[in-house]
Image 1 (cartoon, rainbow, N blue to C red):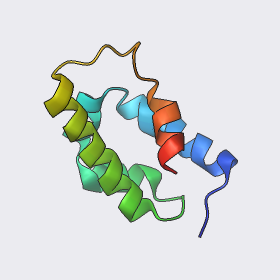
Image 2: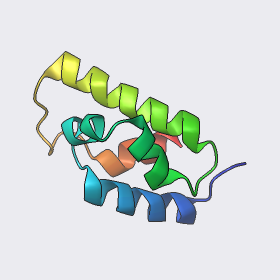
Image 3: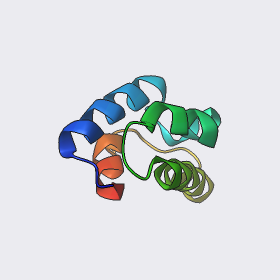
Image 4: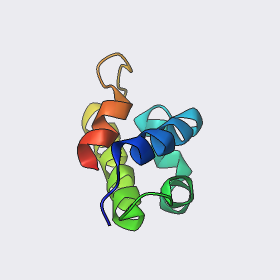
Amino acid sequence: QQSTDKGVNKVTEKLFKKADTPEKMHKLGISKIKNLIKNIGLFNSKAKNVFLLSKKLIEEFNEIDSQLIDSKKLFNFMS
């Protein structure tokens, strides 16, 4: 099932109110991310990928300046 831009925008707004940095996203964990994005198609794999990407960004860059990464654009790119 393919997600619409409208659906993804609703979900990302809710998700990024909870976690707007890779650190916060990683701290949420896969199951909480899944719960927040369950209304879009392929939410299981998307939640896992968002979690793993957050982990990788933390490992590679330690602390990330939130101005460098627009998380919403990143999530939309992955959907």
